[in-house]
Length: 204
Image 1 (cartoon, rainbow, N blue to C red):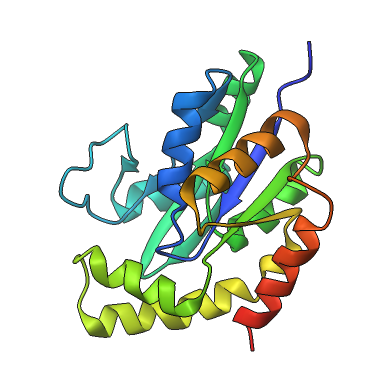
Image 2 (tube, rainbow, N blue to C red):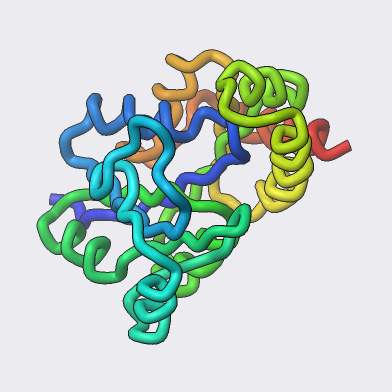
């Protein structure tokens, strides 16, 4: 039996990361998602303990001082963190663990788990990313502009990840993600190189 592994999945806001993770969890029952802690308020439809563990800022800071997080970062004026005991508990039960975090968290996790696998989800273009953010109808144009600026900054760190997946066709992106988790291989030869070429284009 293969030893359970830790997978870090990151993407700019609107990249489709959450949808891909949700679909992967339905497809593969040997994978479990670590639920992050956050100080941001719940969005409509979000459930405490399912989407996030929602805590106040003082509680979060207390846990930081107790070294309770494997990683933590401040994003869009709110704190996010990954529970050390949650991740270690899932691994001990024999399940692979998915972490839905950003590039800052990925760096911290890599220091704690050097053998973890890091995956970055790319949009097919910046225009497509903006369109996705607009279609969500959750944010004002000002907030969308802010998220697009942040997306460019996040994309600049894409080269630090082990794998890049382009989320253009959802089913193909899901197949690529599942292939990495199960086999450590991303599609046909040359695909990873093409994805790095796309990342370079996005950063122009």
